[in-house]
Length: 138
Image 1: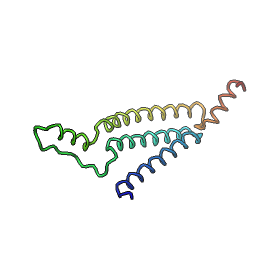
Image 2 (image 1 turned 90 degrees about the vertical axis):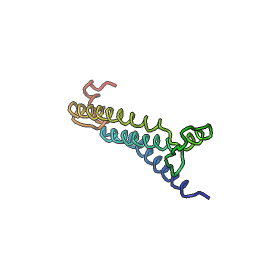
Image 3 (image 1 turned 180 degrees about the vertical axis):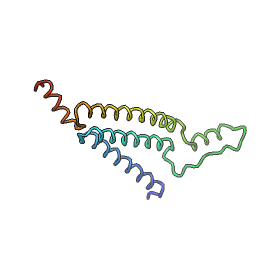
Image 4 (image 1 turned 90 degrees about the horizontal axis):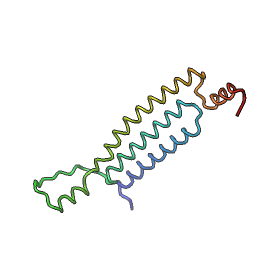
């Protein structure tokens, strides 16, 4: 039988996977460029949550480990490594958030330019306009 901690983690992972699925669906199926940018941002933010959860080593609840021994031995260090939160995923997440923000700003700027040039943000309509501008060629 599953304890409350396992049920909690299962619930969180199901919500994360549903969120990723909806973001990928919106990214593929929606023709509006702004909706695609929003879905891409949701997908990136969901992956950041996955990275944060990976750092917790799938244990609940996680409490900070405090070393009281100033001269640790191998057993203390091994216990510390098994109980502490991995610092690398949060570090990578902070870096990825900054990169995601700059990429989102760039994509929104490009969407604004597309709207100024074509008068629409619908990918299908932009393709039709480009086809007409080329003289109906493929």
